[in-house]
Amino acid sequence: MSDHAFSALERAAVYRAIGERRDMRHFAGGQVPPEVLARLLEAAHHAPSVGLMQPWRFLRISDPQLRQQAHELVEAERVRTAEALGERSDAFMRLKVEGIRDCAELLAVALMDGREKHIFGRRTLPEMDMASVACAIQNLWLAARAEGLGLGWVSLFDPAALAELLGMPAGSKPVALLCLGPVEAFYEKPMLVEQGWATPRPLAELLFENRWGVRGD
Image 1 (cartoon, helix red, strand yellow):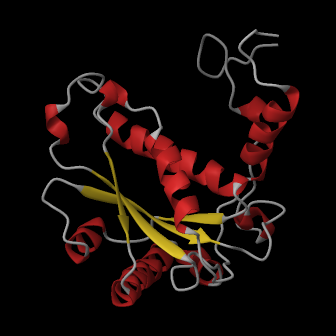
Image 2 (cartoon, helix red, strand yellow):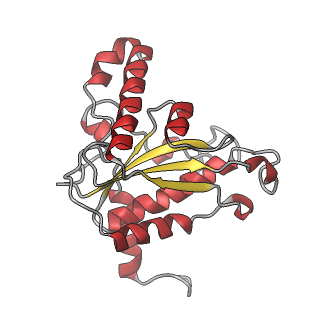
């Protein structure tokens, strides 16, 4: 055991938060206390970022009209996604894909403008700005689970339309609407598994050694 390791109880808490994190769609209204929201956003802000560019920008959507308009953008994309799914369209339309009108807090997470100036770590992999934002969202997600709050990542929207709605500058890009708040219960399994939409693959099928497709011992 490393001298730098957390205690057994602390490690168990970290792994529990990871294992019990769920993409939530069902919320119980209520509120997120300001000090808790501040802790969650600070956790997100502690995420790693390539070249320390910190490309994340958070927009708290507290205006009810804006929240309703965001819901309408998501609903429009939900219908278009169903059409694109063909024979699975009916099953998709039965899924609950967001909780925008039910959650306590709605956050938009976006990539900042002017990202082209950041070359460190992005010259051959410019998408590392998106990877950095995803790390921030995951930090917030795990912290929310530890606080007993649900969080759902909604990506069903036209980025240009949402950017216009939120008055974002040219070059920025929204990547997530995060529904956050109290829930009556967390799903035992990921919702898409419970609903029979998808089956997760075991790690053993996705882990290779030295060469793609070659599995180790």
